[in-house]
Image (spheres, rainbow, N blue to C red):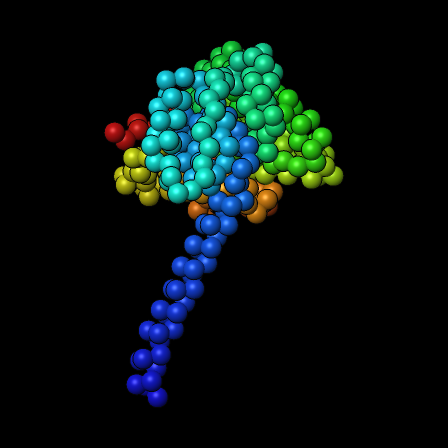
Length: 312
């Protein structure tokens, strides 16, 4: 009996591993087929996340409209996508459009330019974002307004301009790449958190409004999208409870992981995705069911941050 188990267990593990590999490959191929020939708009294609989304959707055969604030960087991305394109698979040459969502007055004209690229938009990915960090009383009202323009008014203006086309064709998907701070405010990020709360509220409402037209609204909320080469520090964060809490809360997600999740969200037409490790998820529940405890922990962290010199 024991000898039989010794032989069966490795075979069982090998079989399970093979099935998982097959499932992953089928899911990957299914994801790519879901965007084949679809017109996909990326509002910030030159960011780390934007580049990865461009790579994934271009490989999947999407008709990309790549937007960004810097024309030279858009052209660099264009060249990179063309150079790695597989000749044996059908891919489309991306279209490039200059877009600065913080300049809301220009967004309607840019929306027309986007529609002129292919005549319609199947998938709009709102991934552009602007960040600011600092005490609320030191952030100017002008900067507050600029953050709101870039993270809220800009995306909703573009969405409103492209939405009638989706409604008339009774098809389409709008994806908002948001942030945990759309659900959970973190100190020293008042303007940023406010803009993310506003954006999430808008798209949650919009989801119900356009469901009857078969237009899907999805939100993907990571803790934050970190850079390619920066990993969380390994300092003595466990010296106090609040440091441990915020270290876990602010762990970022790699752009590659977020881009792949955006693709899965499009394929499965998910309504809401929350990308975070267990600590931020637990913080969400604590904020909901034990708000006084949550506020006390956050306030304690702010006091200690103001009174104790930061580690180098």
